[in-house]
Length: 248
Image 1 (cartoon, helix red, strand yellow):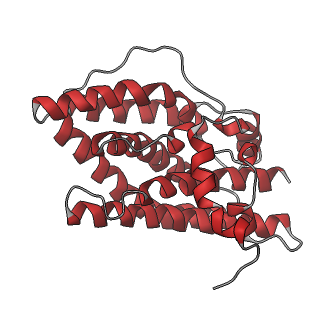
Image 2 (cartoon, one colour; image 1 turned 90 degrees about the vertical axis):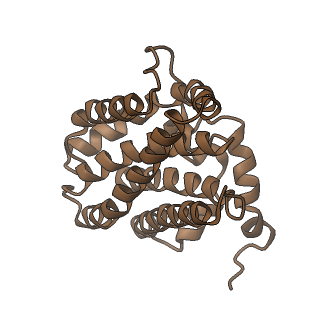
């Protein structure tokens, strides 16, 4: 059951972030970027679906991937808090995406060496996608941070709002360490420095300051969320709850 809990947790963050990105569909600044962000959202939802399918198999019984994705209560989701934060303006969305992409890139590289062949295969398949995601979000952070006075100011505001949610990305709890002990995930200790070094590199190129270390938000991995989460679930779960078991 511990592995089930872990796989379920891994599925939650791309699901919630993908849901957030879908809100931009039809509202992007130009058509090309609208399509690009929609494709990233689809990649995230595809990753989450692969993980939910595996979690459903581990759970057994009549549990399906849809049950796990759409019928749980808020406290049962274990996504990172940064993934549920409101989109805000374009720059804030891309900065949020960048912080998550960097984490996901290094995490999937660690997961591809998993003793669990299914997880290793899922990670290997997703690395190509997340490599593009990180390049895309990095370029936008640099473009906006080192752009006009207005875009630079907006990125500073976004950095102030989002930075307190980044600490959770590289903090590992008892479940993480237990999975590392049995080989399901490897080399977790390398991820914090890898994440930090990449973030420092890109923020430097974007002429954005590295925020001072301070108090960080946490709780997502234990099911304690911000008020934004309830609004996401109200929309995401509506069809499943209004028409239980409905099929296309």
